[in-house]
Image (tube, rainbow, N blue to C red; front, side, top):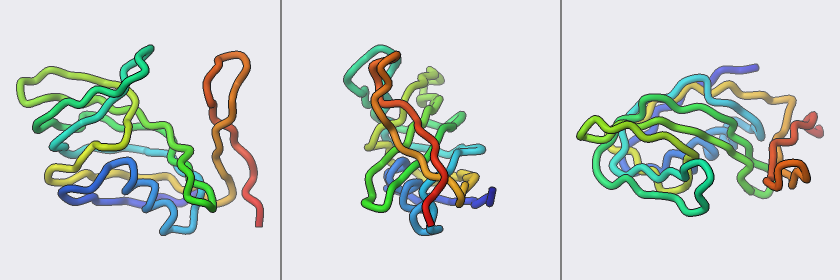
Length: 138
């Protein structure tokens, strides 16, 4: 494992920027060790709900965790969860979907796994595309 700190700037899409950071390091698999920062818009999909919700306005990232996976074609295999607090102090958590825009900064420590690759495949037991971990091909 190789650790890689990332600082994202204003306007960047949190999920897309983390996937780009993994690609730029030549990787296909990583996990988030820690993540904090601020968002101007948070987009989360709550448990058991199909549609994502936008929490418009300023929010703080209280925690960020999950896997970041990209393949050679650029297809995303990421699965990220985040807890955020709004300007009023309300706390929400769920799946990170595209559209989470960094407000001032996001500071994330990634654990890169250069010998592995992640994909998502339909799991008959859950009915969802679930993580599949394989050795990376040379």
